[in-house]
Length: 339
Image (cartoon, rainbow, N blue to C red):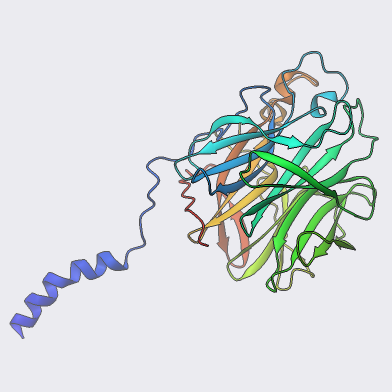
């Protein structure tokens, strides 16, 4: 018995160590802000995807022209190109690369907004909001176009999606359990509610009408903790919904990213996000207008009020709800996706 006790005493520490949760490998927390566009300082609407060719993570974002002092009206959010940033350390730090080479420029002063990107059978598909010009107000059509690319840099036009109206924005595409695809978007002509369309093959789309009778934009759908989630930007923080079947959505009473944070450029509400689930963790990438904090707002139409940056925080799941503490250090660890 004494010998057995000695053996157990020697083995026990290794058993305890094996039972401890694995430590995060990220050496340092993500900075605040996570990323600022070096050209126009207007990064917004991020989407994150693994670049198979470069073996790095890429971020695509709407690149608003916040520092363009010649812009008048809302032209500074029009005439934009999609920016690209790259991370080689699992999403902790990001560097600017370029703008996406999108081969669809049918109108003078064309505008590219809010892409979503999925990969299927070695080909990348982008669903992009396209505005036919650079306008001083919001009263103009916009459509969602589909493009494909073998390398995430160079994009070829495929089609304009046959959606229910000619004023739609903010695509979010998700693969359904049966292998088909669903796209959610914002229908601006129906009180900015969320609509959806289905496709068996990412080529042929059928619009099914309203998915969510709530005002909001930038829908993001993902699966985590054995259920489906949708987050929408309601301009006062982001509303959260959950579903078992991707058709019927139950609201969560509390919004996330509504209360201001304390970090640099994080004192304003969070907007239009992407969520990446990796190794059991869920990270929400969102943007803020630092100059629009309630406590210390910048003058209207100033560069400070227009500029926007990308931030990141880790989502938490507790008592069936999603929470997010934007002031907690975020150790981002995006792993290479499994095939």
